Image (cartoon, rainbow, N blue to C red; front, side, top):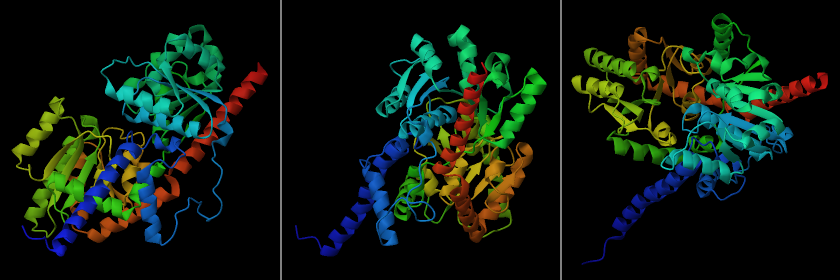
Length: 484
C-alpha cells in the first residue's frame, strides 16, 4: 500500500483534535458539572486538568496569562464567608438527591468548607446499598471534609446542640426538629436558618412548619416566593414568618469558565448537535428540566407545534427549528411522558422533537442550543437556576411570567415572558416565531442576559448575600443568649 498523502494525514490529525478536546471536556463535565458544579468550589488545588485547559484557552485568546482578579483588576478580595472559619455548622436535608434543594445545600457545604468551617450534613433519607446516586453524593461530601451521617442518631442531636448554626433545607426538613431533637428543640431554634425552596401549597402543613415563627430566620430564593410564604402561612396556618431574607442564587465559577470559553462551546455544540441529528444552522429551542406536568413540557410542545404551523402558513423564511426536551426518563415510562411522545407522533414531529434522558451535565446542552424555554406552570419556579445558567451562555430565555423567572428575565430585553397555563400556549408560540425570524434579537437578548448574570448572578454575589444572612442569624442567636 502506498504512503498516504501528507494532506490526508493533516486532515485526520485535525479531525482527532476535536475528539481529544471533547474527551478532555467530557472529563471536565464529569468533574466540574457533576451535581451541577456543586462541589468543585471546595477544591483549591490545580488538579483539575480541564479547568486548566479552559483557563489556558482563555489566556491564549486574550494574549496573556489568566489571573483571577476583581472587577477593578486589583488584588483578589477576601471571601465574604471568612468569618465562618472554625464555626460548626449542621446542615439538615430531607434527602440526598439531584434535585434543586439538596444540591444547593451541598453547594453551601462546599462554600463553608472553603473558608475553614466545620460542616456536618445529616439526612432523613433511607439509604440502600444499590442507590448509586446517594452513595456518590455522600462520598463527594466526605472527600471535601464534610461529615455525613443519619439525621436520627445521637450524633445529630449532639451536633445540633453544639453547632453555631443549623440550616434546615426545605419545608419538609422541619419534621426533623420534633422527631429527633424532641425536648432539645427550644435550645436549637434560635440558631436555625430555614432555607425554603418550595412553591407548592401541599407544603403548608403545621407538621412541617409549626416551629417556623421561632427560628433565627428564613432564607428564600426569590421575593415572589417569600411573599407567597408570608401570606400563605398567615392566612392558612395562622402563624407568622420569622425574619425573612431573599437570596438570589449564582452560577458557579466552573460553569462560567465553560460558558465564557469559545472553543469549549464550539466543540460541545458540534458534538451534541451531531448526536441529535441537528445541523449547525438549525435553530434549537430547549426545555431543560425534569419531565413533569408542573414543568410544562406538554404546553411547550403544543406551542412548538403551533409555531411550526404558523411558519408554514405564513411562508416565513427561517432555518429548520427543533424542540429538545432534556430531563426525560426513558426507563420510568410515566403516563405523562407517554402523552408527550404520543403528541409528537400524532403531529408528525418526530424529526423536529428530541427527547434527552435526564443528565448530570447541562453545560453541553446549553452550549448547543439557541434558546432556553423555562415553562414552569402555576406559581412558576422558586428561582430557576437553569435560567441564569442559560443566560451565562448568552441564550435568550422564553419564560412563564411567574415565580422567580420574573426576577431574572427582564421582559423584552433579556428574553420574552408569556402567561402560565393554556392561555400561554399561543403567546409562547408567537415568541418562538419572533426569535426564529430575528437573529439580531436573539443575539442582543443573549448578550444582555449575559451582562445581567455578570452583574448579579455569579457565585461571589451569592456568597455575599448568604454571608449577610449568616451574620444576622449569628447576631440574633448571640442576642437571645445574652437576654436569657
